[in-house]
Structure formats: structure tokens, C-alpha cells
Image 1 (spheres, rainbow, N blue to C red):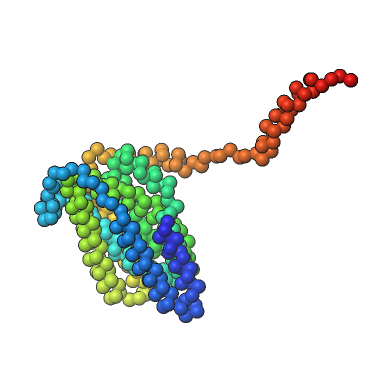
Image 2 (image 1 turned 60 degrees about the vertical axis):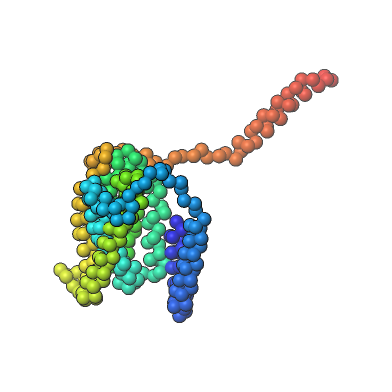
Length: 319
């Protein structure tokens, strides 16, 4: 929510000041604000105390822990998935904002609004969380990975005159990325043994970072060699459209790597689909709250007044 509000505020500021020739100054000011926010975050993080270690037993560290992680057969499929998945996402992640601003000619405010696909996904995330607790993280990760593979294909549909597919992308991506994030974190913790968990988590992050960095460089090189705009099968294409297509195909391939991941006591994707079909109506049901009646406030007062008046009337002397 904080990131979405900040992005929207920055977009509104840029759209208001850029036409007056203050784009450079506005960007510089936003950079200063970002640096100050980063320093504040560091100060807050330093105030956070570290938890007490759960055990005092010596655990392997350094190269020994890394070697143990790489030789663990239960962990190796997840490492390959992290490498392939982040590489597939990186094929277009660094260029989508450029695509919106230049090719789709969207303003900074509209670009910032695309971030708002996340805050409204509270109910689906609760649904994913219950599914992970009951069925395991692996089926959720597999399902969401194949679903997110369609997101770059949706991004190929918008044009400067037709922007409504972006709303569809926000709906699909907001729901599926929420489940993907929950399953990824849960699976990372489940696969890492308690003793060497910090080193395992570091290895998972490193695998994803290496894939993201390498794919970003290769995607940039490919985009620089492609023409800015060309026609294919009677349809106008840009270099970003090619990267979107590559990202969709490589995400589908990386989703196949998720199928090879093994998790103890995890159920299958078909059972997950049946569970979601049964739980979705309950999640989307809107509870009706009783509508207060303003005149109901006066009823007790009238009853009490009538009760007090009854004894007084009975004891009054007769004429």
C-alpha cells in the first residue's frame, strides 16, 4: 500500500510539473525523497532487535553450507526454478515502464495506477494462504506460475487507443502474483533445514538474482538490435512486443521446472483446483450488516416514560 500511494503521488506530481518544463527538477526531487526514505528505513531496521537463536548447536556455514545446499537433491529443483523463473521475468521487467510511457503514450499517473493491482488483492491472498496451509505450497506455485505466464501475452494487446487490456492484466496479475509470492516464501522456508536456513535462503535469492541479471542484459542487447517498429503478419510490432513474447514462453518453460519440485505432504494441482472452486464463493460473499433504524433510539425512552406514568396515574386521588 505504501509503495502504491507513493507511486501515485509521484505520477501526479510529474504530470503536473512536466508540462511546465520542470521534469528534471521534479525527478531530482523525487530521487532525494527516495534517498531520505531509504535512510529512514535503515534507521528503523537498526532499531529492530535480532531474535534469539533457536539452538546453540554449531551449524555449517560459509562454503560448507553452500556445498550442502547445492548437493541437496530436494533443494536443487527449486534452485533451477528460481534461476529460470527470474530470468523469464527479467526479459521484460525492466522495459515495461518504457513501453507504457513511449509506445502506449500513457501519462505518469496512469503508469503509477498499474501498481494498484496489489493492494486490492487481500481476499485472494487469504484464499491462497489457506490453500498453502491445507494443501502445501508446491501446487499453488505450479498453478500460479503457469497463470502468470499469460500476463506478458496480455500486455501485447494494449495500444494507445485501446488501454482496457491493462485492467484485465491488473486483475489477473494481482491475483496470481499474490499466490505466487506466498507459495515461494513458504516453499523456501520448508525446503531449508533449520540449522542452515540462512545460507539456503541466501542461495535461493542468489540463484534468482543471477538469472534476473543475466536475462536483463541479454534482453537489452536484443532490444537494441531490433527495429523500433516493424510489421509481422499484418500486425504492428515493437521490440518490447518481442520481449513480451519471449517472457511469456520462458515463463511457461520455467513453470515446468516447478513441477519437478518435491514437497513433503503436498497435494496435487487438481485437488487445489477443487478446493479453490469450493472456497471461492465463500471468500467473495459479502456479509450483510443490519441497517440501523434512527427511530429505534426513541423507543426505550417512550417505554420508560409510559412505565413511570402508569404508577403515578394509579395513585392519583379521585375527584
